[in-house]
Image (cartoon, rainbow, N blue to C red; front, side):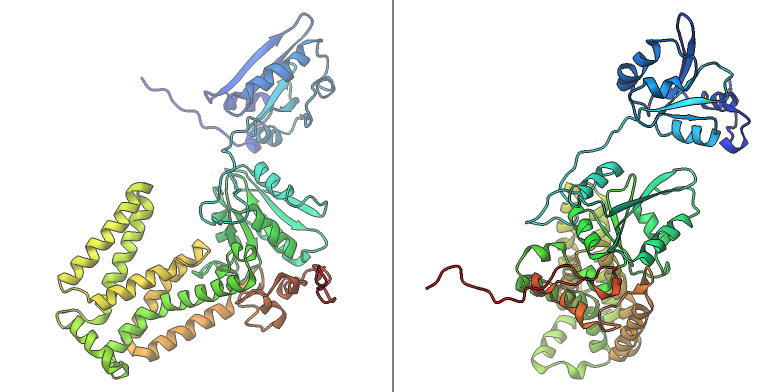
Length: 496
């Protein structure tokens, strides 16, 4: 009735190759058979779910059976596939067979084998960006295949200075992680910092770049992201040219970028595709929207609780009439609406797309209207909270928008306790926290603190591209000059 399971052992505890083969044979998708020839025979072992069987039958086996195999050294000479390995190291053999290699042994008791690469590569096609979509610019996004992602970057940056350092992370998943940088431009200290932090990771699984981000950031207890993740190959190529470091991992459709600064989280890559005046205006609107999203509801609570004398007379009548039927104090009214917005947002994100959109729109209208008619919230605060939620969506980086959503609640608490003084105290705590943050050892508030005037040309506003002739100072790139500035005056094409 019952079949007892045998405990498999790690390659380090196995004695020889035959014992490793016996452990692998416990898996139903592990195939093994003997190919008999007139004068000799050999044994084949592989996982059918990892090996491209058509390639095995058409490009490997015919070359192995055309002549008798006398030694393993004959296999690399016959098989026209690069990367054939002869090995007796059990750890290497186990790692390669789990990567889609075929094991060839000349007899059942041999301790050495040949490993022939024949991986099956299944990956979705390159599609349009979903999170960082732009009207103009490239329409390609990273996918879950590491080789495809490297191809998307190398075709945009076809220079030999582009270096790729590969490391395997995760005791069980053995995830391939690649560190990309431009030799001669990227600061060697930044590159070594990323390499060292990746090599120091001691976890059993790495399923996405998001896990790596949490493990290599400077302050792991901060809600603020200290690395930028992007799904756009053109953005990754652009930051490589600036002297930054890019991290790709197998199975993740995002790339990590570092070191980074706070102002970069409010800069969309589309800003470089439009006129500098339009781009600068968009950045200023985003910064204003973020400050509005964080402060407007706490200021409302603080004003109605402690500082109602600051309200203009014309506006005071509107606020009094809107709150005359509200039994709750401003803090509970604000928290009720903020939590309602967060519930609707989470429900819309977790449900299927079409259902989630319907729930978000209909739920917002129904709950908002019902809460005002029931006398639980005022219509003025409903408008303020809705605008605050809308303003938080202007952040180009999704992770930062989550942080902005979380930051509002401490401000609300301080506003309820001490009014505008509490908002000021909480804002000081926020600035102090940001001053302590670093990204790969570099200041997170640069170029605002420490003040670097040169970097301000591409921070809060973006000056014309002809002024972007030097790389950011905080990166300390080995080559700081992008191009020589144009010193000649512009000339008309036609003489009038």
